[in-house]
Amino acid sequence: MTSTPLLQARGLTVGYDRREVVSGLDLDVEPGAFTVIVGPNACGKSTLLRTLARLLAPSAGAALLDGRSIHGMPTREVAAALGILPQSPSAPDGITVADLVGRGRYPHHGRFRRWSARDDDAVAHALLATGVSELAQRPVDALSGGQRQRAWIAMALCQRTGILLLDEPTTYLDVRHQLDVLDLLVDLNRDEGTTIVAVLHDLNLACRYADRLVAMRDGAVVAEGAPSRIVTEELVTEVFGMPCHVVQDPASGTPLIVPVGRHRVRPRDSGTPGAPEARKD
Image (cartoon, rainbow, N blue to C red; front, side):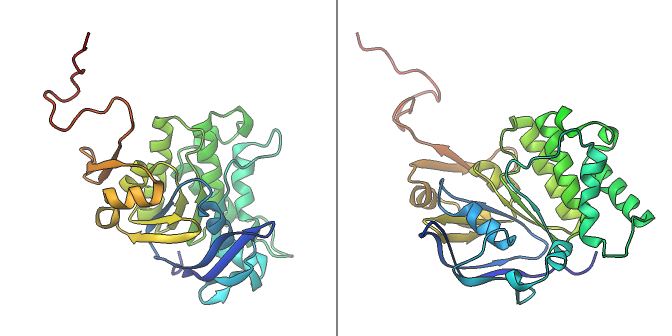
């Protein structure tokens, strides 16, 4: 794979229907890292990702790919450098997994270039890397949620880009399949050298899997860096408006956020952890 392009945002302002969602935002995507963007609903996470992917146009500022405005670059050139998996993608009825994955090769086909052995190799590699080789001839709409998400990631991988952007790749998946997809992304990041940028809702999964966390609120970046460095009770309360305790995840050693609600909360000075409070008749 060629050297990873540098993806940046400079003074990025984006909105919908005259409503500003992202305002004057600066961001450097670290090449070769797994970056996760987190924040409350409607804070601008997906808007930022879609603008970096050239799916939305900014009203001010720019998204830059190797120092060039991504919105001024030819579509084929952008697609050859950057892959995007939007939230809840849809496939044509009846399309097989192999055909879906093969669509990832389109950016590499010029006016006169036909399908080649190199394309076959790219498809086979993407199917193998995502664990869907045995599903190659099955229709995409006959797959489970986890299998379908792997097929879409295989299509993005088949583009052979240095950067992969994913908007909520674990949406609608059960816990097991969420872990499967995130483990797969780590494999792609470590084995293929792919720079990963993902939007996630689950803050604990983000802390477990991200090399670098970008926390957003109200269209701005509040904090960024390694989860172990930036995730504190104060940050979670500031970003999400949620009181919590931050402890160490026993499985990964990363920050684990324990929400504090109004019910089922054990007083700090009570006895046995998890013991029910005595009834007062």
